[in-house]
Image (cartoon, rainbow, N blue to C red):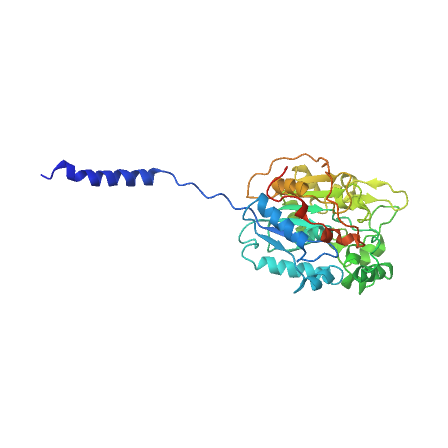
Length: 360
């Protein structure tokens, strides 16, 4: 018989192996959902401010994959596309890009969306019309969901803005304008007696009347897709003088004659639920936020961090949130320069605020 001592190394090895296999292996942290970001009028995908925002997203939720929408081979072409082009074609192009991307396609899983100014409206249109993506949360900042009644004043040398404004003030309902001038395609004119879209708007609108389901024939797919969101968050800016009217950020209607504001919940589009907004509201998924004492796109890292932490990140059950106003802290100052207010985001950067630290 072999000495017992000869078995000790084998027993020791078996003990170590048993311990190793019985110790549970920690599961990797769940990955955050990818985020699609669409900028506003006059901005461009390669702007440092947008890169800062993408970086901030990855600080709040490490490993977040961010796709910044680009409608041109370079920044100049993308900036021009924010003024000129067919919105139907542009949204379709973005749909094709995301649907064929293994990270963002619905075949992989849900994604989140972040839109600034007109980019938020375009993301909503993308969500409604693109079957190749599945969206959990849509967060928009100062977006003209109910259209615009006018463009703000352009900067002295902002020729792109002036060109778009000139076309908008001309024959805005012509087929050419409604197929080529981006802001004209979400211009909205109302019948002051009924509060609904005017006949000229309903007949001539090249894009907004469709994605807002305002025509007699409603597209149930729009209602179903928007109503399937887990969260639709709309930030407005209390002192916004760029978005005309500013209440459009919350789907509100403003009477051009009296100035009377009709909130979303008092509108026919809500009562008849043309878009699924009532469905969202009833399941506590519709969130209205007001940034106090702030103009259009007066954003800070602190405000964005809170939004990113609350509405983005890994798949999880999102907590019920109040429809509260958000106090606005002091905005970083910048040198005075004459720019189109529509490209305000271009001139704001997060460099004055630490990305990794600071007060959340």
